[in-house]
Image (cartoon, rainbow, N blue to C red):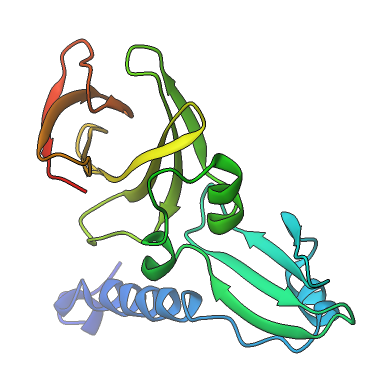
Length: 207
């Protein structure tokens, strides 16, 4: 047992603060961009087998290394026919998410963003929604999801969903041509056009 005048008794939270600082610094290091690879063999040795291989007409191939459903990155490594790396990028970076446009097919989106986290289908609205776990917009959130909404296999809009720690409820905002929309959702399931039992309200603005 600590004596009343011992350092640990006078500063009961000192060790906790040190541990939290070490955890935070370790977390920052974990999210650093990966070092550039020079060859396919080097990427495979460090990353293992890719989640997908996307061939290009010129003979090059894009290797997809998705970290879904729990990670927030998807490393794409383009290699030429000899296996040398031409370029690499994070498919879930904001600038790449912004490339998703209305009218794109599911195959085009799948190739652009990599493996999705989950799929939900809404019979009343006719939408099929794919989502990706992406870096949180705020430290107060549990998670942020980027959603792509399809009707008949074509993109109609995109949105983001925020999951908060209290009560496991979620709120979101989205984009739809023609102005603002409103709606409601329940638990982890939500639909911008149709409500659920005991819904939580949400709102959004146009895309």
